[in-house]
Length: 156
Image 1 (cartoon, rainbow, N blue to C red):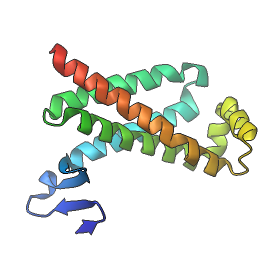
Image 2 (image 1 turned 90 degrees about the vertical axis):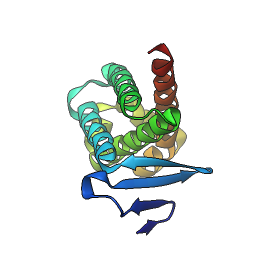
Image 3 (image 1 turned 180 degrees about the horizontal axis):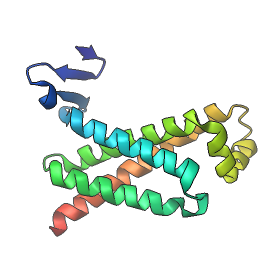
Image 4 (image 1 turned 120 degrees about the vertical axis):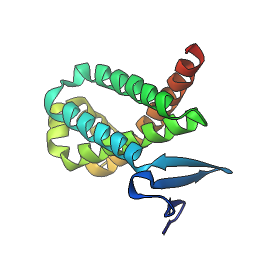
């Protein structure tokens, strides 16, 4: 099956299915299991930052996510480590944003400074505002996770 720049490799059994992403000239092979791990991490982190953890302590959640994702990537992906860590962290960031958008009212109630930022920017739709700002977080999450994964690889 073709999905634009994503395609499934149908020659493997269900647990060995790969999603191949073409970024540049090299392909990154992602197992379905790994993608699910990162999606679940994103959903849990999104829910924790909305309903459990106060906004002022959210930095600790982000640091835990970065370290955890970097360790996971380092344990399972030796080739193209930075690309794998970056891409999976990016996927996690997208999932966190999707969770925040799903529970937008509760998210903005627990993050009043985000609401103020959106108001100052003059963005009329909170959904649109988060969608415009979130990719910056995704890139930073990916870069920090990829960089930390490389650092861990060099130190071990």
